[in-house]
Amino acid sequence: MQYVHCPVMKNEVLQYLVPKRENATFVDCTLGEGGHSELFLQKYPGLKVIGLDRDDAIRAKAINRLSPFGNRFEAKAAWFDEFWKNYEGPQVDLILFDLGISVFHYEESGRGFSFRKSEDLDMRLNAHDGFSARDIVNSYGEEELANVIYNYGEERYSRRISKAICEYRKSKAIEKTDELAEIIYNAVPGEYRHRRIHPATKTFQALRIEVNGELDRIETALDNAVDALVPGGRLGVITFHSLEDRPVKWFFKNHTDRVEILTKKPVIPTEEECMTNSPSRSAKFRVVEKRSK
Ligand SMILES: C[S@@+](CC[C@H](N)C(=O)[O-])C[C@H]1O[C@@H](n2cnc3c(N)ncnc32)[C@H](O)[C@@H]1O
Image (cartoon, rainbow, N blue to C red):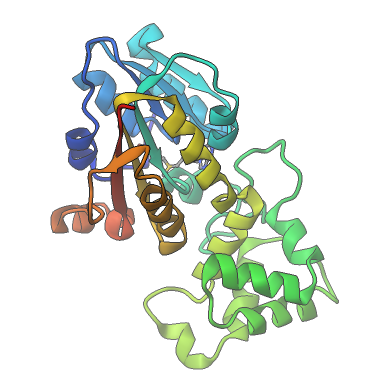
């Protein structure tokens, strides 16, 4: 099987998340294709790993990849915030969040995460969930849609883009990724079309965040995950844009009675990694250690 996602900041993650006992437990809250989990299973023969992912297709890839580790690895179909809210198991030693989506989603899922392809506009990580990106672009009011694009994409032309979408859908429902990308391209000013990033990038990010409730899940997940850590246990979070990083940074700053911040400044990838693994370019890694009472 092919794995298309290269785990970000492998060395830095292994450097900070070190088990302090033989039979420690590591919870990988964003299992993906299992790249980070595999590193830990290989490095620590006594370690037990629990991997969470709400996406059935990518979780199946990780289960296949990690099957050689037998019952040292267990996968769970769960949103990470819901998992930690309901968690009643023993305290765990290490926790990792590697937020967002994987290269798999853009390249292989067929669910419309990439504006470079012609796919149905879906973007749901959980195929059983309610509404999709298609429902959003065809049913939200103009102002509501502009707010989503602005708040979750930080897109300066959110109002123009929302207006163009609402105009277009009067004659035909928007079904495909390339159809939406073209509406956005035509809605923005000429000079904005030829910049380093495609003019649809931020709108696609915003839709994906809205569909999956991505940002709303972060703080409650961190809160309950810290509760589940053993004293001295460590929790690390990798983020890819400021909308993800800000709530993590503030959560840690507001909870220094419970955790010690180990990364005063976020750890960032080496220049070499940025060159060889381009999705890592915007990554930031923050780590805390749970205080003993
Ligand atoms: C950046 S990828 C993780 C890549 C992984 N570390 C690896 O090395 O292959 C993030 C993964 O988390 C999943 N995910 C995102 N938000 C989630 C959430 N709130 N609950 C559960 N899974 C989530 C996505 O489906 C995706 O597979």
